[in-house]
Length: 180
Image (cartoon, rainbow, N blue to C red):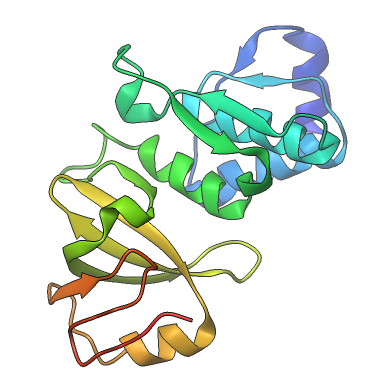
């Protein structure tokens, strides 16, 4: 009901949404589900809303948007429309807190060029039940989707443990844990 009122009262103006990551996800979900014509002032929420709209329409094959860490004009990140998912929403919401939460590193999806050494930082479950691994590499937090089998295997790792991955995302050290 609040979204419906806000969409009418603030027609065309970006909405400011404060609250937990879960609350923000719920607001974005409801806005999409009930097709409210709203925009969000939070860059991460707005990117997630745009990505969700594009994923629903499935017309374009690719979407471009700036990542939070690159908003100062240092570049664009290209994301497949097929990857507009709860995982991308989670990453965008984490990045929305950069500068607000002490020691929070910029998050992004793991890609094959990230192969090599990194530091295991734990696991999480995003909306929809998708399991992810968090890996710190330099000054970034890499987010890697993982099957339940891989999550079970990495449960033997300690947070802060050095690991090495090959370009396919398989663990090649730290007890030869493999990603399916």
